Length: 568
Image (cartoon, rainbow, N blue to C red; front, side, top):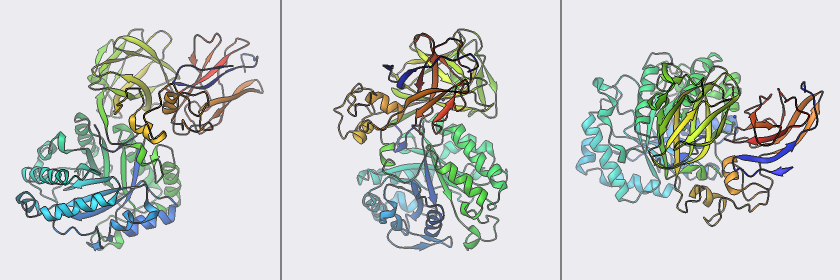
């Protein structure tokens, strides 16, 4: 046995038994592979959800207005249930959660820009500061909805005025959200008419209600706003959503699954679901909204619980705040925007921009991207028919091969940890022995790194409380460096927190591996007969860190082989 030296390779290399041939700057944005789960939108709905599911979500929704500042320190009711953000902010049961707060400015935009609402804006700001949690502030939510009829120029002026006022009040825990209805717009204006400017928008948000059925907006409307957000390099949230029409078994296939597909396609990182019985609310009764509480249908609830409890969704927990990055940067690029060499773009409705890149089937064929800033990670969205590898080059220098999985005809995200300098070229290339892929998009993610050691500063402060440790240090003495622990999402101060190979044995002629699990990371297994040339091996549980034991599907004919775990 020998300890792996490469930081992206976890644990130990195990020598196999002899066997026969029969024998995978945004503000307060989650980790790039996480989605913050938020539930709303009134006190009854949130409490009913937590009581029924046993889960406290990563955040809750609430509302107020510039005219009345209601719903913050006392109950407000607009005919849609009790609104009181203080119930959650002041409740110990909801510590380590965030607040997503909608601010109604309809009919009040003139008062805002004239200064008549300064006292109310200051009161909202002081309340947010005292909330002592991140507050995602939706100013004039669904600004483009025909039902709101907000003039674009007045809206931009009011939005900017509020942000400037809150910043001058030193409200540092507010995150500014620009929230589109993602449906046909008021007077047909383009959404850009309401855009307050990059310096005023931290997140872009959408509403998801009836678009999958095409009865109020369409998928094209959702894609339009998401693509606009990505052109601005802003993270995307679903700020309001509900399974319009009520809950039934069929709703998973025709609403929830399309919503999850949307989240995947556009790399949406916050999802607010309104878990409400709309028919019990006077404002909405009789309008066809139905009872949309996930807990009312056993099939929906079972699927929801499996989804919500998966590692990629953030519910309440001590690691919620450390996983929200105040100084992160996004750089979204569609694959077809890259420089293609022998590859070509093709129309694909499943791809995030409606296009993908194919032709990776001969050595040297590639697509090259240019990163606008520094990045420590990137997410490559790809499709592949087979397990295998694809080449990675940075500034024309070969870095390594990236393991890819068989994606069953769809697209899958590959999270890659790699230091990318500002302005660097990143080339994805088919090399000898690689497998063909289709590329949809790439998202570069950068984090503040004051000591320039390759470790995000906020990760170091979370794990160590200091920037004093280096990437090659191993304070828990488990054989994995701090850099490897960051890559593997394990605790560098806990020797029992590790992703590694424990053992290898034969089971009726089939080699079996036992893996020390890191459920939040996809990993691959590579095999070699000489410890120099490594290949990705298909397994019964190739990219599934929740499975501890996995069978090797195609062992080599050599009487001895070596195996290692790889986290890209």
